[in-house]
Structure formats: C-alpha cells, structure tokens
Length: 270
Image (cartoon, rainbow, N blue to C red; front, side, top):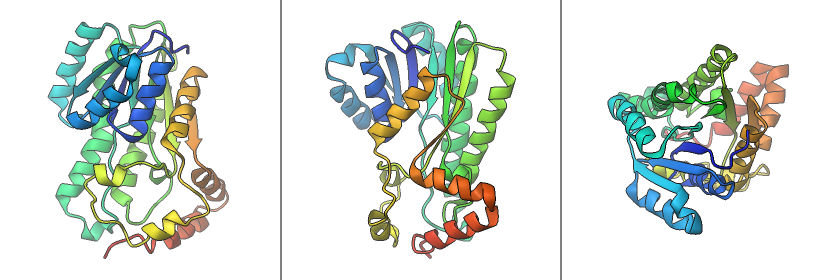
C-alpha cells in the first residue's frame, strides 16, 4: 500500500514508538491523526513534526472510554475525511510483580488499555475502513503476547488477546479491502515504564542495560512497521530477542519458558 496522501490514525502518538510512527508517516506524505492521553506529549510530537505540522492533527483521547472512542470516530471522520489506516500502538505494562502481588485496579488498567483500547478503536473505525478501496489495521502485540513472561503475566495475557484478535480479524476480513497486520516487538527502547506509571526501576534494570541483546530503537521499529504496511505483510517480529525465542519455542516451549523465567528472576519486585 502506498502511504502518500493516506489518512492514518496512530494511538499513543505522543511518545516512543508512536511518535516515531507519526513522524515517519508524515515524511512518507501521509496525513496523520495522532491520539494520546497526554496533551504535553502531543504538543511535543506536533513541535517535532516541523514543516509537516499542517498534515498532522492531534487529539487527547482516553482509548479505554468506549463511548468517547465511538463519538471520536464519528467526529474525526467528519473533520478529516475518510480514514485509510489505523495503527493500534498505545499500550502500558504492569509493575514487575507476580499476579499474587498485583491489585485488581492495576490488572483492570492494563487490560483496559492494552486489549480493550485496541478493540474499541478497531470496532469504532472498521466500518469506515471497509468503505475504502484499500485500507489497513496494524495491531501491536508483544513478546509477552507470544511467550509466558513471569512478572508481566497480565500484560502478556492482554497482548496475547490482541494477537488472537488480530489473527481472527485477518480471517474475517480476508475478502475485504482491509489488510490486518500483527506486529510482535521484543524489547524496544522507549519510556513505556514511565508512561505506565512504574516509577521505580526493577532490580534487573542494570543487568538489562548490560545485556548483549540491545533493545531496538523506536525509529528502527517504526521503519519496520511502516515497511510491513507498504508490503501488505501479515505478521512481523521485531528484534533479535523475540526472533531467537520464537525459534526456541517452536522446538521446545518448555525450554523457552524456563529460559524466560530465569531471565526475569532479577526483574520481579517482591
């Protein structure tokens, strides 16, 4: 799909990977609607857009509020016209704690943002996307959505639900103009912990920073995602970590699970 002159929605467009997606799509000639819950973050994205700012619209929206999302879909299409693509990027992680140590408020927040936020936007904009001769939905899952990661089990469950939702949509929409793409990143160098409200570093952060496998830069991840849209791909893994684990998991899920558990031991806060 050619992205020039297409109108694309990006959730979580105020920082990290979302911001990089916004800026790179603008350079491609797309009109971008950036959604975030932080006005300050959106203003910074708008500032960084520079000469492309006229092609960018920013909106503060809580993607967990279903009624607001549905109303937003109606109002924004009236303002900017038909939508060609939706990138469900917004997401948060949980504190690095075992399920037994998580409160239900935190559990609900993670599931509401990561799964229901994605579902809300998809349901709200799918009717508009189906009106186009060519359109797409990109849903971003995670390494935690493919493999069990102790200390991030609720986050992983939400992202696993995103994975299955995406694969189901691919089947349901196979004879429509809407291409559905599943993105599964490994570690990406973003501020997701801060944006998730996790202020304290886990005990394993220094070890992670010294790891041989370095997190992927947001700019590189955004480039890969945009390339997957242009080439109408269906599923993309981003990062050496997730690709390596995926190979091991295919050979022995038990071994892969043990390796992940051992790696996460120093990250979990008791």
